[in-house]
Image (tube, rainbow, N blue to C red):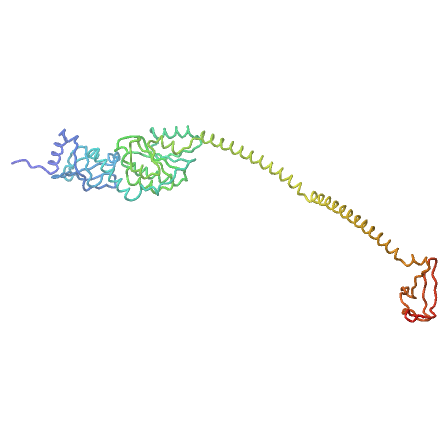
Length: 403
């Protein structure tokens, strides 16, 4: 009778055959990912398929941590590892140690798809770009704590401006968890009130730079309130982070040049403007001094005492002029009075009194010019050249009644 074996024995035998097969120990298989699931422990389970067949695959967490991209449904990949029997279920599966997109073209296809997706969301729009501060004092850096990128940034910053404070958030820059760490670094530095943040790393293949194409990094840059400079790879390398950032630098060194102002140039410029300002102020002071002197002279000329003195002199001139005019007028009046006095004297009764004539007045000293002013017994005075005669009227005879 033929031997009878247990299931475990058969499964173990088949497993041994797989282990002895050199081709199955190190094999690369190309296919399309489906049923992709991430275990809570970090393991990755998925199926590779082509037009006619499927193959179960498992990638343990230690190997998955080395991935530079996130496997997704429908992605064509090349899986490297060994085919072995999973004895509990009696099925064979591929134990994946390395996983990469099927060719560089696949990477670029994924890149273009994500680029189009984020651009359609408006994350590349200029209206969301924030200006980079001209005189940054605190600069955050999200990159690996070792490597050329951080050393270049430190050296250039120290050369350009030793007073700028650099705050490093050390992070992985490639591998499966790199994107999450980079996004966390951006979010953290955004809370510190920095002037600008540099996000980047040195050069590498598109696979090496893939963390900077992930959605979580793009979203972290987009929502960051602090201006972000993306500096990933070399000048010819472009990532999604470059398009979302407020400014792209071709290299980390260039990012440091853009973020950190050159202190010596700034100081020289400041001294130049200070000298210009001093010269302008001195010229202005001299100009104001001249204006002040002119104002003093004007004030001196217009001072009330000066004006009062001038007006006093004018008043004296007017006074002298008036006096001269008055004296001239007095002289004229005196001359006229002399003439009038002479004429009056010539007509004065006293002149005629000396020739036998007398000047008569009544008791009230009023001149007597008519007999009608007299009545008998009226007292009158006769003024002669050598005295006055007082007499009484005895008879009045009008001219028309004289015999």
